[in-house]
Image (cartoon, helix red, strand yellow):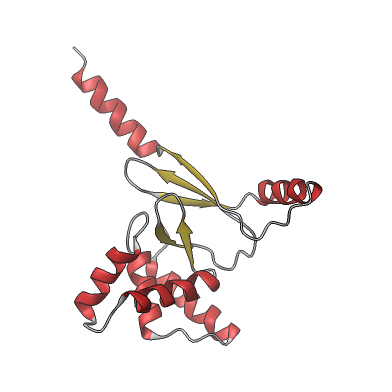
Length: 156
């Protein structure tokens, strides 16, 4: 897992270079997402933010999320309706997400050849790709190992 402090520093630099306002609320939303293992749903985010800022409302959270997604700092996990911090926002191409169904861990891959192939094939079929989300749901190595140890411990 990337250090959340590094993610925040990188986000500040990126926003400054782009002339985008990285407000305290946007920063805090990114901090909350970056320090949560796996994805964080918008209303979980709102609950955490409201504990610190009484004026926090759903539009506040959704505007911050929209900004962070537009800046490439956060990804929406479509299958979970949750958000995860991007460990490498400088990467301008598409991405793929590996999502553990057991522990919720999310890993980001950058297999450009996969995205290029899909975009090229779509174009051949006369389709213009506007957004691409590739999520692979399964089980991470740590969960697989802990489950296999639990099963072998139960065996006579």
